[in-house]
Image (tube, rainbow, N blue to C red):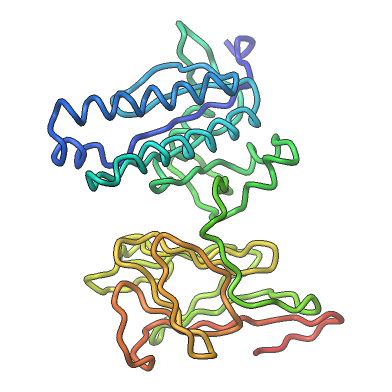
Length: 307
């Protein structure tokens, strides 16, 4: 049986919020819209040299000979679905897609594919948020330079059925929401970010390069507020910069040391040296902002310093 294994990239693309589409638009219109999205996904797969294995409800499963083809297809899918969603803005309908893929050995049988690599790809799509593309370290290591530069590590976690933790990467397909808040000195290497909320303290560093914030108890920093989303925001360490990404319904408020108040709604920014953050609820008094953060830095030549 092992001799029939081949290495392929398996990709899953799942249309998000399909239940709400049927509630908002009715069965006929929602079915037509969903079918159009599935066709759009299939077109992107074929244009990148892949093949659709099957459609499972509102999800497409596809395979590609290489990891690069899967990565390009994933980005093309997100861009195409975003364009389709923009045309529906007048109807107040949100059309999104979650994408996950993984490259590894699979078994082919009867036009379908099976194996651990397929299971990992399915796990990636289940972890992806709306408008997000997730993959693994093993896959990123197989990417060419251009596609590799679009990937950044966001998490490391143990998944069901595997003893070793998976290093999870996000593939960036749009950069308009990524804004640098203030220039960083080339003489300083940012090593750690410390976040405090009451008596709770968490750090982001090279060993733990991401941190999740939200109402769900599985978050790294749990914010038990009614307007906080279950998985509200995330902080990632990327090339010496700490990036705050809002993933919520009600938004995230950042207060900088200079007194600037910035509201993020499904946007990203590079964190300054220190500041305060509010999740979902934005009090006027900055003393009530629940989360405080600061960067711990290491100048060239060594010696830890705190801002």
